[in-house]
Image (cartoon, rainbow, N blue to C red; front, side, top):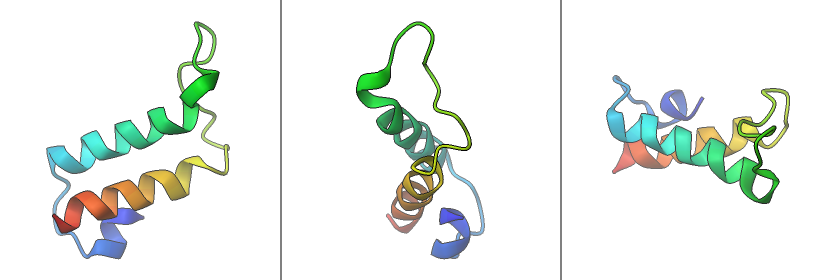
Length: 59
């Protein structure tokens, strides 16, 4: 969503890293051996990734 919102024509490495960091930020303090990736149904994931990717695309 973030790439579309930013009008990006390509997905760059910077955008991929931003997406990964956003996913990690959602896990945050919940990180443990059994919880390293948030559920894709977690309502915080989509907006966090979209915002991070859009920001990375505009730089």
